[in-house]
Length: 299
Image 1 (tube, rainbow, N blue to C red):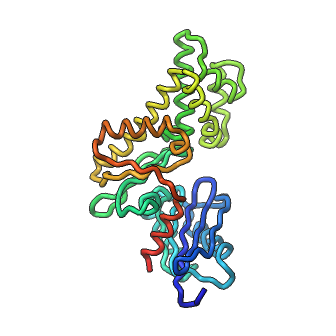
Image 2 (image 1 turned 30 degrees about the vertical axis):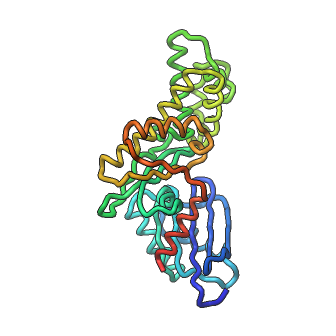
Image 3 (image 1 turned 180 degrees about the vertical axis):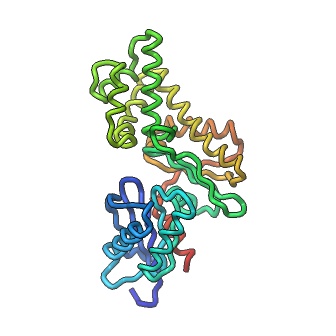
């Protein structure tokens, strides 16, 4: 690699893993994945130190980036992102850009504008108004929100099972699956099991496959939970549209929605009903591609 060749680095800092990809003159010079442990986005100095160390470790010896763009999990406000950006530029001596990780989806799909919607463990949607102002909706965590994400689906499945129990109904495939997954004796014990979680999103979310398996086994409760989850995800896009965000294209990512056809179908059906003509796009490339595209735009 020639010293004069610009090297751009894109970084996708997710909730569990981080992906750095670097290119020089179109050639990939680094593709590095590591855990996101130690990522502290609410401390700009600590976040910048963490990112700078990642860049040093991932790039070839002696290589220096000409531009770096980062999509950071839990980077929730422009002020927060600006603080990390300033600190990172100081450490790297190169232009940098910091955005929330959901903002990587639209450029990763090769689009100039649109909505990024994530339904993985949690759920969130982001977009920009015509004046460029960022708007984010959802992403409130498994206890209060994240409808349509894995943890939110499990929470709502437990509520559905409890309601059926209160109606005197015999446990169906959903109730039986939850009881087995949380290793309790009966439906009323699910409450204590959910409350005992120390990492609510992760511990609830890992049981989401139970909901989809129950739906396939014929549980009407599970099917309703999935349909409601799809409508909740579509409602995030509607909320953005109501706030003057351009929503013609919606790029969809996240392990839950892209691996579960029933949830994706429920979302697209609800979206078509609420906002006819809006085009959903399942993301088929790693979100880090969006970070690389943003880094190129800094040159």
